[in-house]
Amino acid sequence: MDSPLPSPLPSNKNLDSPLPSNKNVSLRASSSAGNYVESTHAHVLLYCGVYDSARTQYALQTIRNMILPNSRAFLCAAATTAVTPRSPILKLLARHRKCLFGRGFHGDIESSGMTYSRSSMYLEVLISVCLYDIRSYYLNLGQARLTLEEIAGNRQVQIASVELLSVILSELAGIVRDSGKGLSCYLADLLARLKLQKIILHCILASVTSASKKPGPGTNS
Image 1 (cartoon, helix red, strand yellow):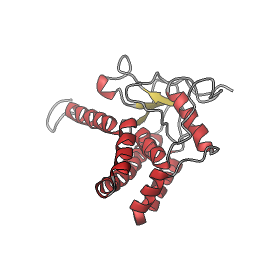
Image 2 (tube, rainbow, N blue to C red; image 1 turned 180 degrees about the vertical axis):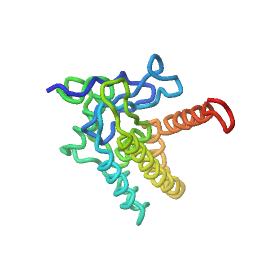
Image 3 (cartoon, rainbow, N blue to C red; image 1 turned 120 degrees about the horizontal axis):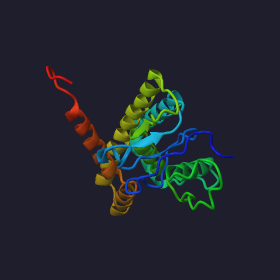
Image 4 (tube, rainbow, N blue to C red; image 1 turned 60 degrees about the vertical axis):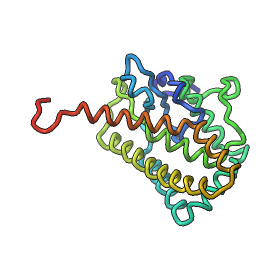
């Protein structure tokens, strides 16, 4: 069955890694520099439908609360524990990846070539979810009116994702410093594969650019 939501915008393949987020009710894709947004916002992911931001925020905060008591043990386990091959998480991740590339959420996954790696670790899933949530925004092309609560809810999800990602990366820095070369190389390869540094730099650049365009005190807008 085809999705009732509008088709997502084409993906920016230079920024997108094959790791979608956990919002399985929303269709969204990365915008590309062109008619829609400035090139500094090419990393942004646009929603084509409203999702339950309250549940998403609760899930992110719950994971953060689980990590904080013993973050090193949790993250070491997450980095070395693969998602069960029959887990529905893998199918949902594959469908989100399929949707990100503009092929819709529903339909056959195998024929689309968007199958998800069966050796993915839980740490990879956590970081990828945060990276997708941080750069997610609602699409506003006239299909539906967004309420202030929905916009604010998405912003709170972004904040919760930043907080969770900060906890993860802060502890990973200590793990890399104290562990052997094998785990350090694996984590470095993982972060490079997820394009973490590139995505974060794009987010910072977009924030600085947006802030510089705001009129200062006493200036006419």
